[in-house]
Length: 401
Length: 85
Image 1 (cartoon, rainbow over the protein chains, first blue to last red):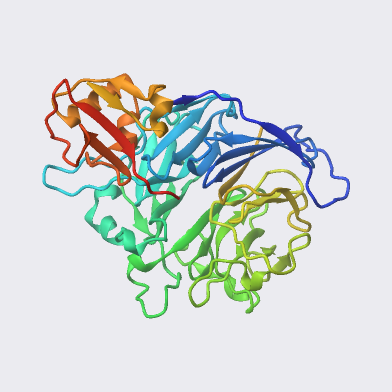
Image 2 (image 1 turned 30 degrees about the vertical axis):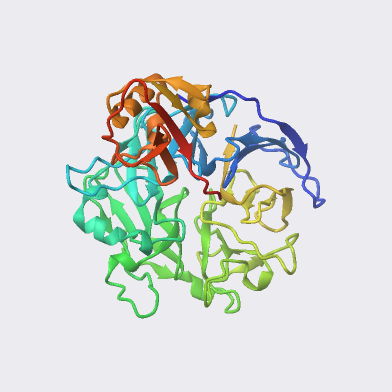
């Protein structure tokens, strides 16, 4: 088993923008920002006021880390979804906040095809979701090509989960490698209802949003109201491209979605998504990847628009990056760009690379395709750069320790 | 037989040259995985196919067939392809 025990370098960085005196965290806990990049992972330990950050990394230098997640149920177990440009995919696990790591003994892998059949191979694990609080040590993983996996031993061994990986109907909705995002079609946004571990959501790019109410025994699409690229039939599940779906912890009957074709809200038990992105400024549009929900207010969400016109540059619109917030469920949106570059900034933010902590006021964090890590201590009113010159950032998670 | 492994696999083997046994390349990989758990899946996928950027040589000759027969005197090389990124 591969193991790394190398102590990573640490250094303290202060955000480059000066900010007003920040209140200490009410809970007495500290925020840990987990940064997964194309060339390794970093952990940023915040002080009690979220003003200075101690960098711990790189971990797995040279590995492509698609997701790095702390288990909120024990506050110390980290899982990292990893591969390199040459080596196959795996999952690394730490039970001491990244001081030491051990490799999963059985990483996510599809079932072996019968003799003569053509089976699928996991290219990379893309998404990691800790399971319900009542199911300690259980995790879900989403892969590229699209597959759903579960571990019941804290990420040491993984098994295909549910029937969808080999179901002809789901396989047709998943499409081929050519139907997915440039680095492969992805199963993502695996969501466990905090009220009921048998109630699951997941999304596929492409392949739609899906729900299970029986712990994965059956799944069904929920795509009504979601638009698709012009010229395609919205009744075809395969052409739906949800980029990121989030459930509101303060109201688990409400979901928000950033899609290839706009921003949406869904209020259960309805099955009809409402395109709330139509209320975004026309010059900016409502295309993007991340979607961030407020920990305590289901009317407040943040997005980070990108340029999805013509050839899909996947940069900030007009080279002027900004988050947008709605505080009324999507009826209106406000631009949040204070502290961000005003021009000629051609980066953007990937679907897993923006997140919030649970403090008051909420801290927001995002990582850019150009390797910058930004945060706001005041819900997006003012942004400051925590780190520059990192590799391309794939995922950012905020945990509290 | 002697097996030369590439640097990305040193986290498993700790040394460039290791000794493993097997009557075929598949058996050799199984033995390597027994000695160094996890190594095989990094170079061979779940459909028993060589991963896209890994190459296998026996006595200097590139091999594509996992059922290729091996003799104890053969020298096996696992090589990371010269594809960057």
